[in-house]
Image 1 (spheres, rainbow, N blue to C red):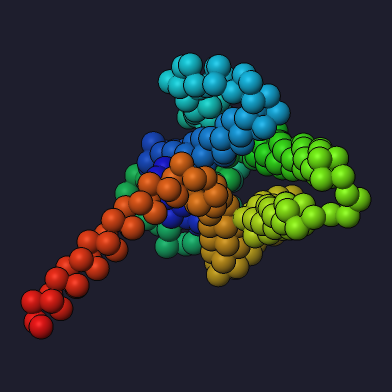
Image 2: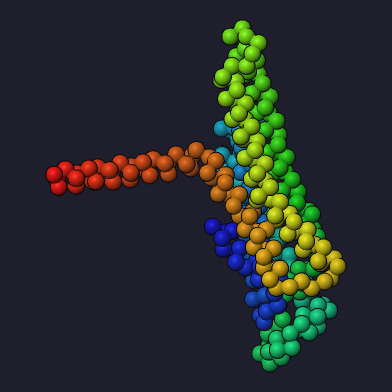
Amino acid sequence: MCTGVALPFIPLMGLNRELSFSSCLVAHVFPNFLFLAFLFNLVMVHYERYICIVDPLHYNNLWMHRSFPLALLVVWAPPLLYASLPAFGWNNWTGPDWNDCCASSQKLATNCSTNGTACCSYSRVFPNAFIYLEVYGLVLPAILTIAGMTGRVLWITRGQLKDICRLHRSVERGSQASDREQRLNLRYTRCVVAVSLTFLACWVPYLIYMHVCIAVLISDTKWSFNTHIVLSCTGIGSMAVVPLVLGLANKQYTEPAYKVLQKLRDRWRRRTHGSEEGDT
């Protein structure tokens, strides 16, 4: 939900607007906080599933289950503190970017001088050091951590599958793979393909968008409005699909929805069958 609130504002961060200092901070800090909190939430979800596979005996005693408010505090506090740093003085509001920002639009500069507002842009709120630290100190390590835990889970699952097949062959006393082993291997292959496609479709577009933004920032070049909107919406939007994929892959979410749909279908069939009998 918070990601859905933040997504429409993220492409606007690359545009110059006429806002006051406080409004400009809110327009940039709040979506950035929601985005970082969303990413840290994903890390916590993958960590919980990682512990479920790696150490299943201690899964029910996991600290996140004993104190869920504490887990939320641990996950949301670092993004809130880091995203709020521009509000505590780490910004370029009084720096040289003011002239560059207003020079890009003469009409905007005139309005800024007459209305008492200022030219609001991401370069005035987020210094380059802040952006580099967020990308390579928070975002990229979080994505790599998610990828590492997912790969580790697949590796452990592959080892468990080999043990199951070995035990099955020892019981059946056969050297050839049975139909059950082939079904297990096929299921594991489908799982690997699904995870790989999910990573390519959800995370790779955002990684491309993130590094393109860094390259543009380093080269100090201007890119077109349409290019910025397309890249930002594609990168951020693809990453926002990850919670939907996790929910559809979890039976705790799909089974209740399936039961509700089944009840509605049975009720509809009874009504249809009753109306047909009444007509006859």
